[in-house]
Image 1 (spheres, rainbow, N blue to C red):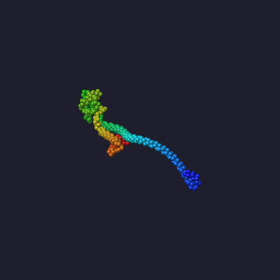
Image 2 (tube, one colour; image 1 turned 60 degrees about the vertical axis):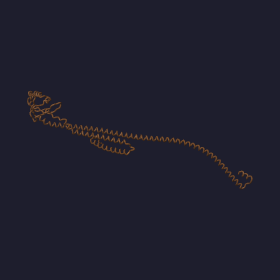
Image 3 (cartoon, rainbow, N blue to C red; image 1 turned 135 degrees about the vertical axis):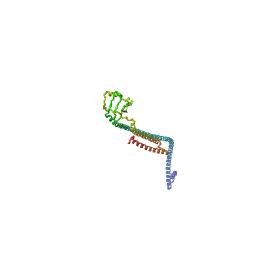
Image 4 (tube, rainbow, N blue to C red; image 1 turned 180 degrees about the vertical axis):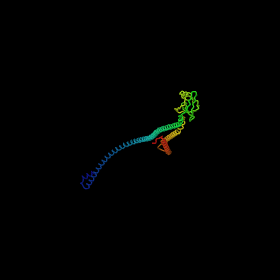
Length: 350
């Protein structure tokens, strides 16, 4: 086109068609130039894109390799995670076992602490009971001594009342026939109100009374046991030159009251002693019953503590209810026995 354009310019003058064709040719030429530039630019950009694609492909391969490595690492991490989960489960299981053991230990500690407190309370109760029993024993002993003293006082009063009339009679005037040494040991008493009297004799330091008759018929054993024989007594009276009748009031009564036998004191003290013995026996029975009930309650509580808290079956629930009802019944019995012991002043009322 360029050649044709140059030829047309040289050979012929310009015309309208020629000019139009020239313009068209120039326009086409310009477009070709522009397209040629575009093609160059596109080629250059294509090269750049290819280089970028190559670099991106290399990066992609590197990323794939990294992903593969990461996949391997992730698999290893999963294995480690599974192992750690197993260890965690085992640790959790062991922790549950240890927690259960600790709970059992805590329950045992609480149980032993309760048992220690109960034993301490029981020991205090036993100490108080012992103090009460000692006080009761002292009171009973004081009552016993009081009753015994009262019994002795009553016996002495009765003996003194029995002594009044004989003392009065013996204090009255009596005529005595003083014998001489020739008259061998005979006393004669002028008959008074009483035809016989009593005379003290000693036998192994035990004083008792024996009858003495006015005819001088004294028993030989009593004569031998007397502090002074009749002959010596007569000689002693003759030495004093007491040949006449005289009034000699006795310095002590010529009789001694019959000693009250210890059996009588025992018989008089029997009701009081029986009452005290019955009271002590009743208190001992109540205390033994109280101890048995406390032991029974402790046994029931220990049986309840041995029942597991978790996973109760129907039989365990029935047994638990039965033991609780039994404990309530035993506590009612303990309260009634405590009331009886408080009435007997063995337990404190507060």
